[in-house]
Length: 499
Length: 139
Image (cartoon, rainbow over all chains, first blue to last red; front, side, top):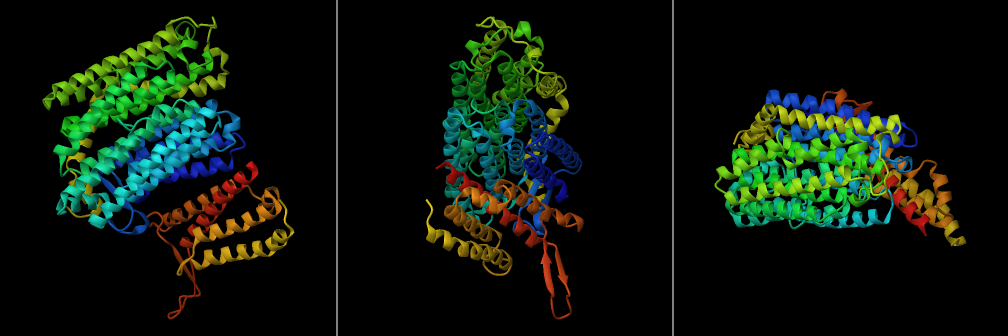
């Protein structure tokens, strides 16, 4: 069992090493693609095991929990790992054509795989300090990917990114220290048992808030999101796609994990804070997007706004709301990564990501237009695409909880999202190109077209499948919500004892 | 800047530091030491050489690119974790081989833990040298 759990970590690391040693030739790219494909197979195997047996756990090095490091996969972890592998596969194929040879020779594909290992590790670990280590792995790899082109804006964005993330990491580490001082353990399942028995619950809430801020920076919630729009529009498109898809979601995952498993003692306070954070995040994100005129900057602000929806699901803490949060998480990763990939193709054939300077894509590249419409409408929540169900479940949960005002905000933000998406649509696709160029897909070579469009089409198909056949996905999210709200199965799997 | 004193001293120092780094690495299993500190000391050896004779000389003495050394080290560390698979243990469980063990004597103990430490040694040394060489060449 422990091997099945650690394979999704071993594979990207090995792929990273191989890819780095072969980085001067085409072998580096292929090692990355093969590694992602192998990881998808391994995470699929993990998923089927989790579906069959419930929560599974493994102890690294044979040291029993809570002393050693546990890897745990419940429904949420398993689906996050699968979706990480899907994104990694799509982006690594896309990167074959997107990343210039100069940057590939610096070890782009190897760093990419190490980033994926960090993300998968954060999803699978059952140990708080180990989570911190995975955050560091991610931070180092992502900083490398951000600044790899070496341009001025990239360094600027990269420094902001690293500075704010370091603050978050230090806060996280301080929180871990306090937690260890109070409980004497860092195993999450063990924490879930010990924290409710502590005498000083006030201090627990303080530490909970430290974790909330630390993970909040990672997840880019209001008012800690500044680093995200500053950094995400500068690197190569493959990098921004994988960042947009996965990095902030690790923060959201960590929030969901800690605030359903460990910090559930003072829900009326902590989750009320989360609720308002969620509302402000949704609103500021979408308003920020409305003010932008760059393809990638609009999408970056939308990440912030969409994070709000997921936090909203967590904040309500009802079974239906958690279902919505999980569903939203999965849907959002696919859609957001895809939109950045589309932005990359649009910029390659039309010459810019600045909306004022491109246009005419609908007339000359209708295929790309269709491929943009699917994720864009899904993001805005049009039926029958995946985003509609995600928003529908969340709004329903909000109304059931008797919070009409919050539901109103969520719907209004959805409407403003449509506004931004139509802005991109009108400027980049409908209006004619300002320089009277005719951007065509055929300007790309056949190999480039294949590598760039295949992942986009694949992710778009996935969006449609989730949208048209939501039942199994909702059922899965329900199972996952049940596991999150009743942590006894998780604790039993890790510690081998029941509550 | 070339200083004849430093260059002459470096010859002695570099050899000493490199031997000491391997000593630290091997000693690390039961007493203070290990791959991390060993790698740092080994890196210092090459850093001294780079300061005394220039980075291009140091790169030549190293033979392999430091980034590749670091990555190879990561590969070795992963491999040591994978050894447990063959013995059907959990990942990264230490595997031991006692050569010439008798009832009273453990003989020569060899372990996958040492392989992991060698990996760490190479990662630390490669990473530090990548940084230092890059900074030295910038100036």
